Length: 84
Figure 1: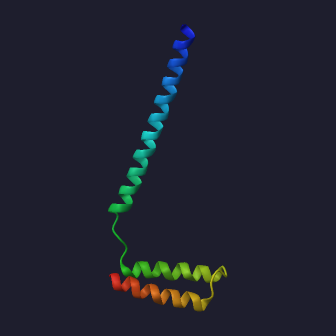
Figure 2: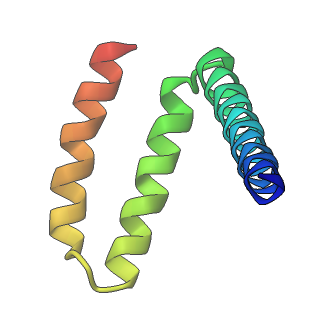
Figure 3: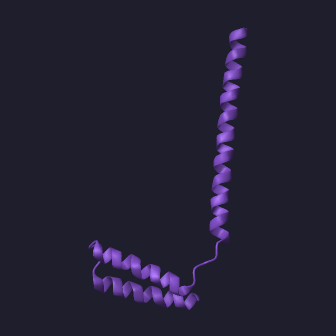
């Protein structure tokens, strides 16, 4: 009977520890999500600077050609400035 009690306590403790870890992870995820949601959105010029930098890096790594980058950037400029 005593062995069953020990196993129960060990299992209960392990389950409680897992629940606490899950709750802590959930709180951390919620905090991160809230910080993203409530952070100010970048303005159009910041977004365009980021797009330009990303495309320049892709060209540098030979992932796309300069012509492809220019066409894609011009399409995104229209969308971003259309939203602004």
